[in-house]
Amino acid sequence: MLTYLFVIILFANFFVGVLLGISSIGGFLLPLIFVGFLEFPLRDSLALSFLSFAVAGLIGAYYYWKSGNMDVKLATFLSIGSIPGALIGVKLNVLIPDDTAKLLLYLFVLVSGVSLLLKSKKSKRNVPAEANKSKLLDSKASILLIGLISAAICSLTGAGGPILLVPLLSNLGISIRVAVGVCLLNSVVIAIPSVFGYFQFANMENLPLLLVASVVGQIIGTLTGSFFSNKVKLNHLSISIASLTVVSSTYMIIMLFI
Image 1 (cartoon, rainbow, N blue to C red):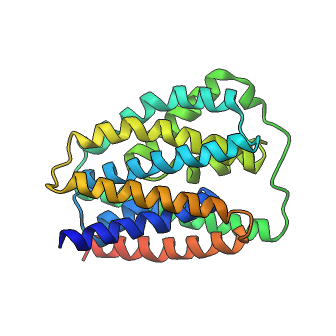
Image 2: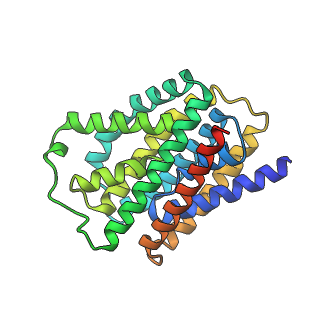
């Protein structure tokens, strides 16, 4: 049974890592797999997921920084706000009942999938992705607040940071590639306090071995995805991920009430 779980988690992280390496999206599938399909305890699942987000975020952020697609100042202020936000999200998750936390996770994943689907259709119609930079980004307080709120939502629900922040920053006038780079770095800052927070409530006996499977699978997957990132049509990939997400999360929401 343990070998089976090790292999499943290894391949789940490899699959999601490839998606993250190519497009920075898809991380929210991990807690869905762990909680919904493998039926792991909620906090153990979130600890595993956020560790994977940290690994993928580090690798992805390095690639985007190396290619010049990183706004260090924006990422810094977002991250400063994200640290307390992540801790707040973990505390809120622990305070609410497990079924409520699971419902929040599935609902957020569903909304993320629908948002991604709409965004993919929008880009297919060649709607301009960039706009004039919003004055909101000139305010350090506003950036800190965005980091705080987005991190709290991400750590509470178990969703990866980029799925929430990339569309927001893009709409505020940040180029899509810079937005992805910034959000990948920010996802590391969200993930680290979330990992430590959820580990305090994790109780699976074989969790250390499963952590190894998560890290190894995520590293190989993210590096593989980064290699193929310029060879895949992102719009088709986004539609596929969004469709899978909507169907899976809808199924899990239904199963909660049966």
